[in-house]
Length: 482
Image (spheres, rainbow, N blue to C red):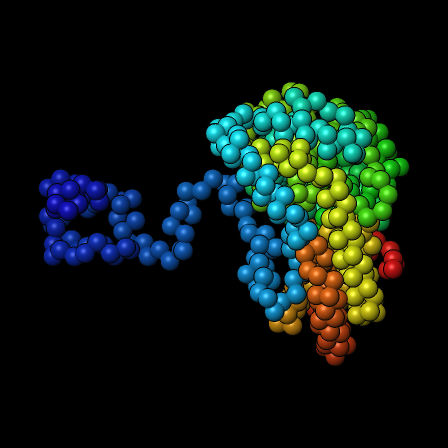
């Protein structure tokens, strides 16, 4: 680079005399003769600074970026995916029973017969064929919807992100169950919302606790934008909200003019009986519904949806177009073709039976191997069990020892925005085989027995959770239901 150009870039004033030349090292200023005019102060300060930060751009980020952190589950992936480790951590759907020959045939026909349309840009709202199919799927949960009120999203996760974007300002309050889905907490944190947890128990969200929270927040002058809830086969708690509770919750939402975001990825994966009617099926004005094909078909297509009142849907489409122009068109056509040409209801039945077998293995393993004082939920569908540990044992502190024993789980603290949950953990039974699940519970039981012995010898350093109970005012959901 020419000398004059280098002086221009570094901000030296014209006519400055430079002493002995040196390479422009980061954080190491070139020497300047005594007769040289001083450089501009900001430039000199920048040249003097010995910057040891790993992220050179840290001062440039928006405020909201500073609250963004990797989820506890993602942090576990590198270790939990090792073949010698039994991972009871991730909620990865098991698609072993998905008929790949049939899916392959559908995709082959799609490319040959409609490939040019399927591989082109599409609508920001989503393709009409898949929106119509989505309405058929939702009818299984008593939801009557028009395709015009559906917006396709990149998984239900993107739908949640876009809803938070259009509704929430920094400092707004979002109400969530305690515990709550870690991915939702990450979204709310990224938009600088304050999460206030609401008590739940073995019947799901407690409407009385919700009413108390609303009164306290409104007395304090806080703006509550919506309640986020997973009423069916909750992630991570594994419990399901009863029909009576749903009706009570909706009555409260009407009286308080509270918007409800119903996230329902597991609703069709119940193990016994028909699905409980969705909240959206009982209230079209107060409830926005989030759905996904990740659990009932395959997560790799990344097709989810939002069912919302017309005005909200319009805002969502604008936000979608700003984010992605349009959701992936090929994935939408693939899902629509699968639903039109395959017995998807029969396939969901196979998934339910497979997950039921794994749930049963988890309960058998926990019953056989957990030490005294441990309790857990009994899920009637979905992917997860919520474990409550004996007093004094910290699931987060114990995790390295569990991984050393070749078993992984997610510590309960990942599912709270307020630092609680140390006595709890989420166990997933959806992906491992029944044999691996039982082996995983055996390994976990040995780690817990060791922790209990160390506790007897050295006492506890684990903080009490201040009397707050595990699922709501944070207590175990009840005795072991086996």
